[in-house]
Image (cartoon, rainbow, N blue to C red; front, side, top):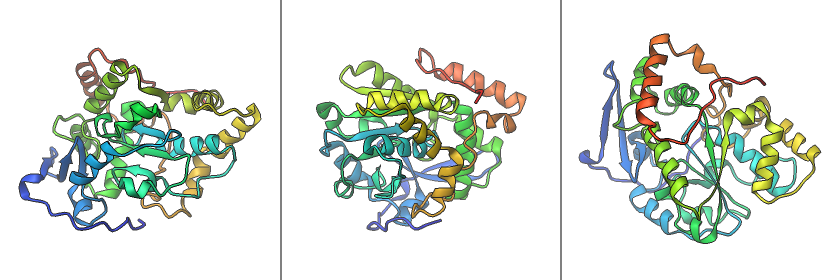
Length: 310
């Protein structure tokens, strides 16, 4: 894996660490901060700026009027959306070679770092809305939120964690962690994250959010790209949108990322399928997970698609 930026050393006390143990005894050590769960190893290897200082700075940072925020739970498709949005905003069929996605990611970067990026910026994050810039409401920034069915998210995040934090537990071990209340790497429990964003979208009439469903983008990319363009107030031809769709097909992006200087380039794109969860969930696990969703998403607005016809 490529190297991260080397930030100043962060001193962590033992009581700063949240230790999570899966059913088989495998341990994940996390550093919780403002609802985000940093892997302890990543903090100690200086991969991130000190979040105790950085996240408050992010909350206070000034945005630009043409900033677009791309938000989602991890492993939901933000690398894919980032490329599509980049082409739409810049009106050219070229991948984003100006900066890698992680260079514009909060809280992996500081406000000072992202301030060096040229406009229009696509600022992406897995943070809760409460930890994003308050200026989003003042500037009325566009916010694209990506929704993906949680069964595929869980499978994708399992493989991601095996590579990024060397998680050694089984799929069942990980699934139990995914459904737990204590925390999960990066964005905490999936159900809490989704309920928080659901309430934010409902309660903030001044917040301009477009929800993009991963499965809809897979099933009908041209329609969803046209919807994105309309939301972003950029006009182009149907032929251009069709070419954006072709350029941003999963396998093409996967091949292109192999040559990028992105620390996640080897693990960002795995399969990109809808329904891969069926290869991992047993009948009993699926029933348990469905019960979990029913209990945790009470009065939620979210709907999910677990299979599509492409």
